[in-house]
Amino acid sequence: QKVQSGGPTMSPPVLPQLPQGFHHLYTHIEYECASPFYHHFGSPRRTCLKTGKWSGRHVSCSPVCGKHLTFDPERPEEAHWPWLAAIYRRTSKGTEAKMTTGNGQAESVKKDAGTWSDILNLGSGWQLVCSGALVNQRSLVVA
Image (cartoon, rainbow, N blue to C red; front, side):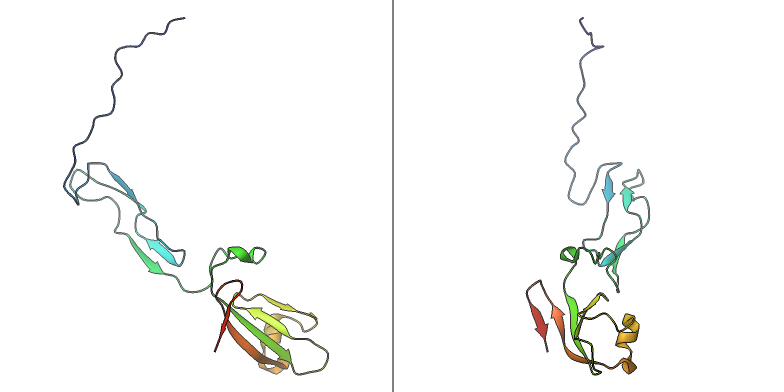
């Protein structure tokens, strides 16, 4: 069966080159922050309007302080560096040393000391032995 077309197909028009800093009408720009440690404010997508202005609100990225939102303790290899590390020794008899990372995760040879807030409480009998920053999977910087 022969298919007929309604006429020649037209390709999209070729737009002329504009001077630097100028954009074609209805050009879209999408913004995102370059680092996960920054939060985006303003309109993430803006369009060049007939008025010569951009739609939406001005865009900026501001630093975010605190815990990284995508940390998964089950997959630490995907975490961002550095981490903080510390070794504690219990001054009472019967418990081994502990290691605590900056993300709040801690491990113990014997887990009989209660919650981590109990462990780090000054009255718990734990003494800081050493601390530093893990800058990668094999390097710890201490001072």
